[in-house]
Length: 124
Image (tube, rainbow, N blue to C red; front, side, top):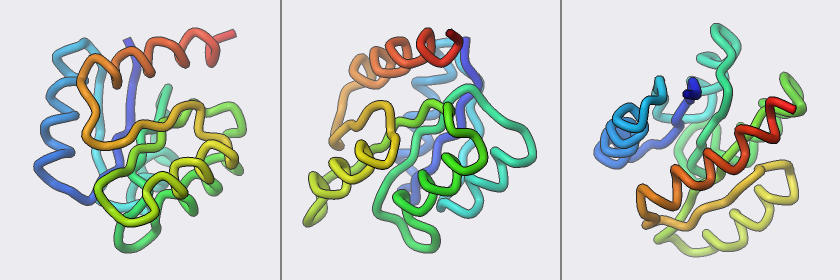
């Protein structure tokens, strides 16, 4: 399975998604904002990064851009929702290189499907 960094400032959401991913066999490290997520990636690169877009500190768009500079082929899933302009941010994230975008709330099945779809492509 995959090693994943999950970046999201919503603590309960992050815990639930990390639990779902762990139960699916993935190893997960979490960060509450973009700078911490990038630091985790620099310390130990992972197979995939899942990042929220609207967060305090370094937000998701900046995080995606920095991760792209570090590893242009890194699979990234951008997540957002429930806030004004979430769809606009998700569209922009896709343009900047997120392989998938998901609108919150999304199901566990949707997230796992997105991971399974982009991982084989990343390993080619």
